[in-house]
Amino acid sequence: MSSAPIGILGGTFDPIHYGHLAIAEEVRVALRLDRVLIIPAGEQPLKIGKHMAPPEHRLAMARLACADNPFFEVSSIEIDRPGPSYTHVTLQLLHDQGLENLYLILGADALADLPRWRETPRILTLARIVVVSRPGAAIDLPALAEMFPALPERLILIEGPRLDISSTDLRQRVAQGRPIRYQTPDAVVAYIEAHGLYR
Image 1 (cartoon, rainbow, N blue to C red):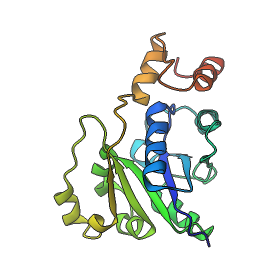
Image 2: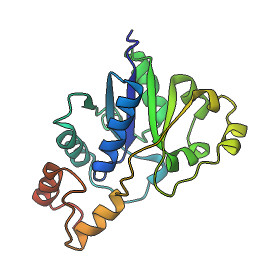
Image 3: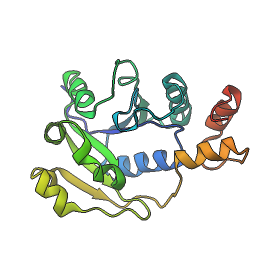
Image 4: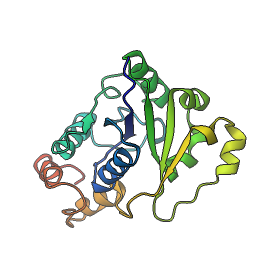
């Protein structure tokens, strides 16, 4: 069993960008985490039916983006598993691998979606929730605490870097032939161009 504190940052990462990386690093340093697992979703349950780049491309871009940070580790645990990528299943699998001191990193917008997640009470037993504030995002903590009484004692709030970058915007920019350099690592830009993604 490992008691080392480990951050978990999941998402579609379609594509991964500096906003994701900055949040992961902010939390890692603030909480003195041993490392942060970056976990691209195989099939995001809340985005079923929406077009996404194939998982192997999103995984490859995440690996390229994280290559120069020894504290970031990209995991294919959700992509390797068939069906929707449910957080409680992923956290349980990590626990089964001996990783028990987990910190699930969320943006404020993702926290607001918590009532739509499966097995939220189970998630709260498997990991602490670290919420990184984002520009323009508000958290209705009293309402969430009413639904999930264990949440307040499992919640850590961190002021995040003010990078207003979104994957949706990056995809639109690529489709329009506009630049995305300086919003995502150069290796990701090159990968998108080489594979004709988001055109």
